[in-house]
Image 1: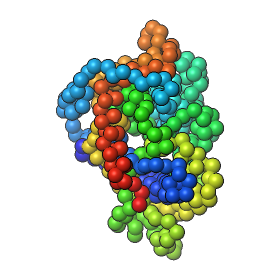
Image 2: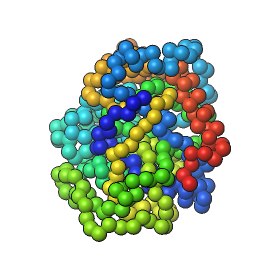
Image 3: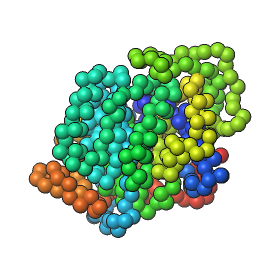
Image 4: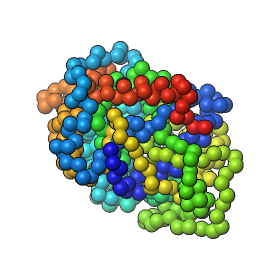
Length: 379
């Protein structure tokens, strides 16, 4: 697919990819936490803005594969995901819709509207979560009510992600992978599909898009020193340059890639708890590091797509053709009970994977072959 123009506020790939890859190198060499690293860009996709809904529909893989239901795996093997869904000013409705499309009672969710969002938007989100029948009953949706100031080209974006990880680790130990999304992202598969596709995987695997070929970014991103006002100001302003410039690091290697990752629980623990000093060292290094908005993603049988505006008609097509989701409701799954559907929580240890699960499993199988051959890893 053709890449959309990236809104810089959601992308900090050079920062997060290098940070993650450095952690992975240490853990894989010294601690044995990570057995393989896969490319995350295969799990995410971008829709071109100029393609109409009629053009999109034939491209979905579901129309080309058997529509028969797949047998779910045994209950104990079904994983759990922990999500961060972030937004800013004007993103309340987008975030609310994405949260409903992603929701499953097995998972954990942290949502965040940054400090640039008006207080009434943040209060409205908190009220919706508190008064929502399912959310209040299951208790797996948490809002960061003390909003962070986030400058999306600076280190405050990394700090916000680590903040969400810390909350998820504190609230529940019972999840397997962390996924960070924005309010402008949207799933292309149901949560039952995603849970099924990941059920057979080693729980220590991490999915990261990365490359060590920095090119022009070495000079324009890695060597300049910046100051992020979000670290000390209560109002948002852009980062600014400081002098002098610095040389490239020799104690570790820089990588660039996508800000969107799927990280194992064990790796998130290492990043947040930091029993090795590397996480703290790298975070301090990136305090003066400018992130890059030039991230691009490739066409693939993706699990998620981006970047959507509010009430984009393409979202209605995804809801209808891929998710089976009714307006203002949850994406249906085996957990759904009651009338109307999904108004009550049934057995959330059961899943009913559909054609999206088969599509995603094929993608993961292809990635696994590369991993077994030692390809696509931080080197």
